Length: 215
Image (cartoon, rainbow, N blue to C red; front, side, top):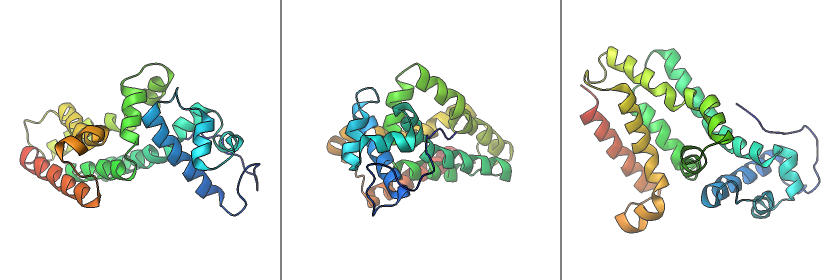
């Protein structure tokens, strides 16, 4: 799923000489992830991303190609490892629902802007980005969950009256929506998003799973 336009050169114009390429790329991706989620893809110029990352705009294009390539590089950085983890569960023959939830919460905790970005640019939008996401990401991520849950159900590790598709959607909602709703849930509902708060939230989700999905 990798679409970055990264080139193999020793130096690029505008790159600070005392910072490694990997560090700069992560800094650019971090800024792009946050700005795309806050302002939207169309309203975020590469120049703004470069300014916040402290690099020349030409370096952003040098590493990632077009702005749309950068958007998918932001997604690849997080979603490719997630897809690989889900594929490993498929191959292992066992996918504990608690581990699936922990995988998703861990991703959202490390990259809290990404759920909002995906909701904004994929779920609530249409066009090329949604089409590419539906083709390249969805089948290996959320689209793989009903099959995993159905197998767990067949093995007796989930309740027999569970609808795998609905259960998969519920898991996605439980794990990702709190990070999308943070601007309101933090000040108005008293939800804490610090390390302790995320841990408590994760434990609550595990309790919901244990009481509502397991035999």
